Image (tube, rainbow, N blue to C red; front, side, top):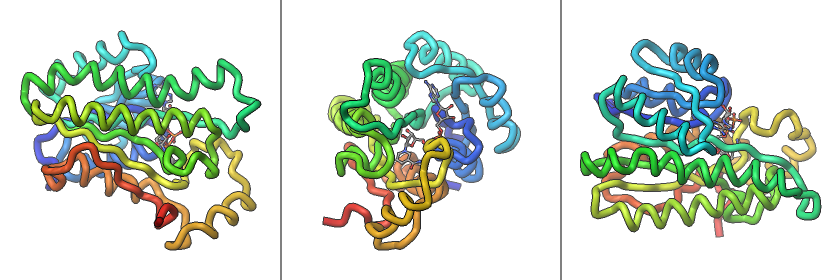
Length: 249
Ligand code: NAD
């Protein structure tokens, strides 16, 4: 049991086939108690019930600072404290550079980047007061490659922003014994692509993956467990690639 008696907040974890839900399930199997935060309260509560008893689901739009603060306080009230935050909520859009309008830019950067900032800010004072915490941020291989997978340039920019934000938080929060690390998944089979990923796109992408398969949410969850738990006690500010070897260089 790597997370016995640990409390974890996971954003964007209501999506049934998503990375957040897989992380929530694995953390629960490892003894953790989980707060699932997502846009829809019913979906968040159903996802929490699905992973077992004692977990909670709350409505929280991570782009709204007030939502993040309210959710953080509610989790602390109901579960006692928070050890782990997984900044997982994110959306993407497969647009070319000249097709990105202001509303596209705002939608995509707001969820990943502003959301990571606001949710972290909502829990940092609590983690500081306990002199303990582990924050894991979901970036993407798109940040490192400059896209070329599914998301457009605004997605690459948002996820590159997440890497910078996570490293800066790691530097600032290290003295408080709060670790901050990032995951950069390759193409993972979830619903984020909204049915727009064609077989032809998959075949092209597979050519560049030495392990010769697309990723599964469980692959990312396993790596997230490593970064969230004490197994990675001397790691902060790192970027862990979970991409089947797509970025070997
Ligand atoms: P998903 O679409 O299955 O799940 C995303 C979840 O985020 C959904 O439950 C959605 O309701 C929630 N969400 C969206 N906007 C929100 C908001 N404003 N506030 C709170 N919740 C919100 O996606 P996924 O594939 O599981 O992706 C999870 C994370 O991993 C994202 O940050 C994504 O960018 C990142 N990622 C995914 C892949 C991939 O190939 N699937 C690759 C690299 C990185």
